[in-house]
Image 1 (cartoon, helix red, strand yellow):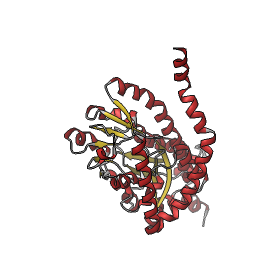
Image 2 (spheres, helix red, strand yellow):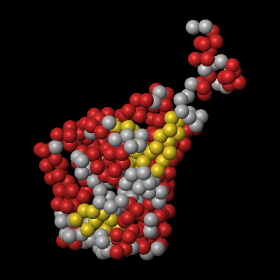
Image 3 (cartoon, helix red, strand yellow):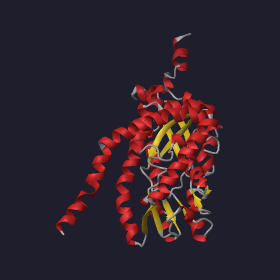
Image 4 (tube, helix red, strand yellow):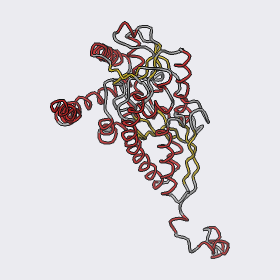
Length: 369
């Protein structure tokens, strides 16, 4: 090959001479254009904007060469079809909550939240340091040609909005409640009729009385979509969502086409967004709860009888799945062992601190009175 032919084939001939001053690393970055289908409407600002911020970080780190455009729920695919859209390569990636797909297998809940399960910190510990990412990928996501990465956690959620007070198990029988994932299967054992409704459709369903109750997220999101206007009673805790994780789904073929550098950048950007989403929820929820109460919201806690009944029903469901669901069993055994160890540790340090410090000021004021 002569010199001119070599230079031309290498992209370094006379036509490219004007670009020789550009940094070599910038020239080497390939251009990648992806679409991300979100399961979340733009009204759920923290989750939706968290994905946008991740995409912005990827763009900044690659000089704009790796561009991910985020589409809200329903713009490309329906909210509950994101997993299939990524699996089928309709889109290169998606942002969703894996417990939306428990209809495929109840084990998908472990990638998001399970009743009486892991808190946000514990979920992150299991995912990043306890092998959770790799385990759920091997058992579940490999079947769908998907790479999974944590992308956000809301922190402990509220128990939801109710049109009427719930004081006993009898009050729950026949109750039509919008609820996703494991919790729907648990509450069904107690007579509740679970409804799976996208977030954007909850308000009109409550307003018309199509449903009697709905969980969503927590004070900030719930206020933003106006649920306090159509249901008076706001219950806690959301025992089914102590630390619900949302997940970045990446089509494995699209992932394998990325350079190692781009893969590393995407991992780092997702991990940063995972932290920032939780931080924003923790910052925004306290003032939002105060505003809700000032607008007439009636805060109520589930009583101990209801909580214990839910706990027992959860244990029954776990036992049933262990007997009949191989994928569930493969994840549950590892998850349960990790959870039990975490509970022992958090009882020693975290819980003892929380139980005292969170109420100390109120006790001091009572003593001074």
